[in-house]
Each structure stands twice: as C-alpha cells, then as structure tokens.
Length: 162
Length: 271
Image (cartoon, rainbow over all chains, first blue to last red; front, top):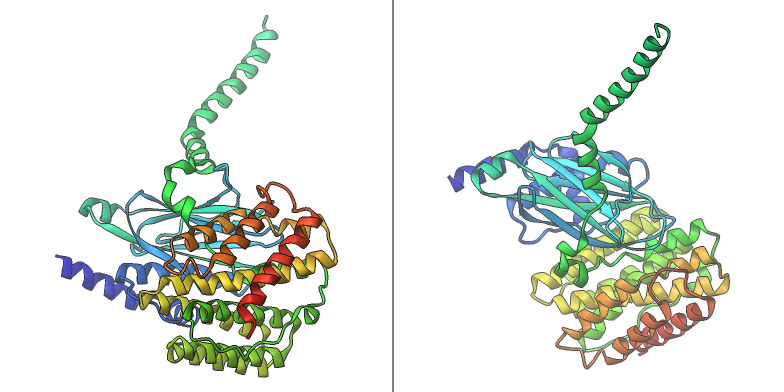
C-alpha cells in the first residue's frame, strides 16, 4: 500500500507543469533529503507563485516544508519590513486538498490584504506590513484522502517580495 | 391602521431579511473570524526559537524606496582574509554575500565580480566549492550582462546552497554563522544609511528584536560559543539599543547599533 502511494505521488510529480518544475530547479538550487510529498508540495507552491514572479515579485530562494496531519496548523516566523509587499505561497502534496495560508502579527491578528482561494492543492496570501517586525505565517492543509488513511500530507511555503 | 400596516410590514420584512441574511452568512463570518485571529501561544517552541533571517536586499530595497542612498559609499572591499577557522570563514562568507547585495544596489560590476570570486575562494576553504561554483559563475555572468536582478537571485541561491550543504554535512552551526555574518554586515550598512539621513520610516527597519534574540539563542547553543563571545555580547547591546520594536529606533541608538555592528564586522574581516 505504501509503495502504491509512493508511486502515485511520484506519478503526480511527473504531471506537474514543466514551467513550475524548471522554476523550482532554478529558484531553489539543490534540495536535500526531501520526501516525495515535500517535493510535490514545493512544486505546487512554485506553480502558484509563477504568475506573481512575472509581476516583479522577487522569489526568496529558501523554502520551508514538511509533513503534517490534515487540519494541523504549521507556523513559520518571518521578519517583515514596512515598505515591502510580500506574497506567501503554499502548496500541498495532495492536489485535491484545500490549502490555507495566512500571516499574523505579534498579537495574532491577520494582516492579509489578499488571498488566493478555491484553488486545490495551493494557496497564497499577500501582505503589506503596516509595521516592521516579526510575523507568523500559518499553513493549514485539509486533505480528505490523507485524513481517511490516517496519513500525513506534504506542505511547503515560499515567499516573494517587491 | 391600513396605512400603518403596510408600512410596518415593510419594516418587519426588512428586519426579517436582515436577520435571515445574517443567519445565512453566519458560518462564513465565523470561518472568516477564525481566520482573522489566532492564538499564537499554541505554537510555543517554533515561535520563540526560530525566525527566518531576511536577506539583505529585502531591507536595502526598502531604503531605496525611501530615498536614494549613495550605495557606492557603503561598499567595502572584499577578499584577502585567510583563516583555518571554519567558524570565522562561515561568518566571513556571510559578510561577503551581504557585500554582494550592497554591490547590486550600487550596480557596481567590479565589486560584484570580486564578490563572486571571494565566495568561491571561501567555499573552497569550507570544502563546498563544487556546490557553489555554478552560482559563482552565474553571478559573474549576470554582472557582465548588467543583470542586477540575476545577480541578486544568484547571491540568494548561493547563500541557500551554502547553508543547505552545511546542514547536509551536519554542520548547522556553520550554516547559522553564514546567516549571522550576513545579518551583521547588512545591519551595519542599514544603520550607516539611516545615520546619514535619519527619519522614522528608515529607523523602523531596525525593529528586529526577535531576530536578535534568535541569533542569541543560536549562539548560546553552539559548540563554538566561546569563540563567538564578542558577537554574543554585541548582540545583547544591539537588543538593548533596538528596544521592544514597538517604535522607530532613536537616532542615537541607530548610531550605537552602527558602531557595534561595524566593530563586529571588522573583527570578522580583518586579516
């Protein structure tokens, strides 16, 4: 069963658009010890990022990824600067999952000004910080298939600024 | 009465439709509210210990939006330092990459080429040249083509590759030192620019107390923490000068942070 799932995951990796795959290679350089689920999730995060990079957003080379249970919240803390505009892009290894990403200030208030919604397997949030300081991006992935199997799902987060 | 009833009925209808409308949208509003506010105390470990270190160009580009700093004046020569000490070489590598970002703002091709060569030389000292050589070449190629965004992208990729490789080699401390060196040099440049033309918007870019705490915690956990004693002490002073991060750092404190970071960077880059 595990092998079938791995194969499914790998097959889906191949289905990712060439543009996203090429972008990921150029943008991230080498990726070490990533599970196929994380690789898929990273590829999806790049797929959702691609149109914004054409609009002048500069992609940060570093990525954050891992595996979480469906519905679990994963936080990553960032230092953001007033005067910059940021997009955070998130991807999931399950192309049918719902991906939510939001950014919160130190008091836990959302600072999102725009979100990418209703796109399966990926999500995004735009932030224009009113203050320079530390903010927390939270990724949540709701995957019915992972939940029904009691398995974890790959997540990935990237950001760009301009 | 006949006149009153229809009028009242319209009023009741509007109340009813408002109530029904509100009821219909209640789940959506709840979902939105839940999304609008979060209890950050549910993530104690991650939130306290780890902050993603920004790359210098994220800050330098805001400074560009706030005015036209003389980036050429901020540039410093790179190269010539040899050390058998890997911790110092990692710190040095961080400062060199940061210098590259300043050179991008200054659009100084010669300095970018120096940066690319120095990145390669230091990577060789750390035994990771083969992972970095492609990025260094790309930096040189992009500089020759005046592709400043390409240079910035490759500097970012270089730092990431260096840190990834270090972590793969189970040397996370060196990876952290690369980030630390870059942050120190970046902060030195930031404070230098703000000091020359102080205003609240520029000074607010120094509201980074969580990042300073993050570096302090990392150093405290390092095997080489004794060696990094002066940096640790400098970070404590910087944290004090920055304050809580709830208001722009005062002009005097900006100068103080500049003096501290300049001194620490000098220690790293002096032959």
